[in-house]
Amino acid sequence: MATPADALLGWYDRHRRTLPWRAPPGAPGGGRPDPYRVWLSEIMLQQTTVATVGPRYRRFLERFPTVGALAAAPEAEVMEEWAGLGYYARARNLHACAKAVAAAGGFPHTVAGLLALPGIGRYTAAAVAAIAFDQPAVPTDGNVERVVARLHAVEAPLPGARPRLDALAQRFLADPAMRARPGDFAQALFDLGATICTPRNPACALCPWREGCAGHRLGIAATLPRKAPKAARPLRHGAHFLLLDGAGRAVLRRRPPEGLLGGMLEIPGTPWREAPWGEAEALAAAPFPGVPGDAWRLLPGVARHGFTHLEVEMRLYAAALPGLDAPPGTELRPVAEARAALPTAMRRLLALADAAGLG
Image 1: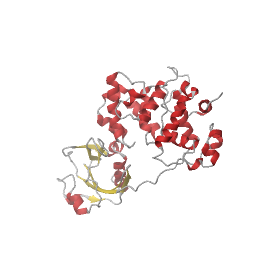
Image 2: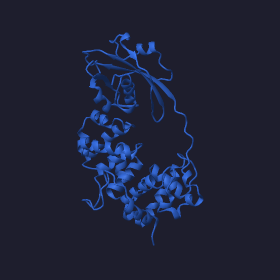
Image 3: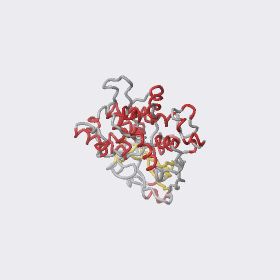
Image 4: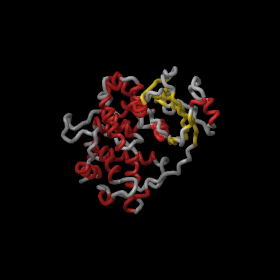
């Protein structure tokens, strides 16, 4: 008798996505992908879209082709390669995890073993165990939560409904077809959520689980999962100072290893605070005391960037000092190189400089 996993896997065999971190059917090693590549893709895909991750994943692998190469790299290089992907604690944890895996001689094969590594939580441990090692595990990400909420018509809102949705997802472990192909089943769930059971306008007519879906039967699938209203994010203000040396190089500094944008390069600036910075007090707080106040020019516009828990509005002052040497604790980088190494929040400041003809 066909089971729900049979139906999903049959659909997956016909419609699976081709992604750079997946091993195609019939690939060497029985079609099992490299655990390093699986783990790397799962970390990159947290809070980041497949479209964004694809080219960055390939570039990352060119620079760090193995877990050993990643472990041996300086942390600063890893952080710069991660620039623009956001959620920068992921990069610090990625590097720490690579060191632990390299020291142990490889990735553990079980969920419990993977959970013991830095930066690996329940979802990532289940995904790597299932996909890389064919262990029976059901990783529950946003796609899976959405599929399960609709399948069982769970109307309780997120995030409170997450434990229930995870418990419902774990019921798939009892399905013999799932246990025969755990890695394919996990990826089939991801593909179903990404291509059929989408957040808006789900393609229920094409879904292999349509007949058994309570949300579809009740006509509420498109409204699920419900979400509790989000609290407004506080707004903070900062002033940053783009100091150029006259040869197309900018002065950058590295942020402390912990905290927001920890370990990333930045355009030096004031702390971010609740009240906007007036020009006089911003210049008084400028991180380059050797630069006279009248050398700075306030550029038009405001750079705004949203983090998970706050919004930041930043103004940009610019000055050029030909023949400048990098002040202590900073470094000079060509602006084009700086653009690639800076996190997105700092790139928004460079956009103000571009608009003013300073890029």
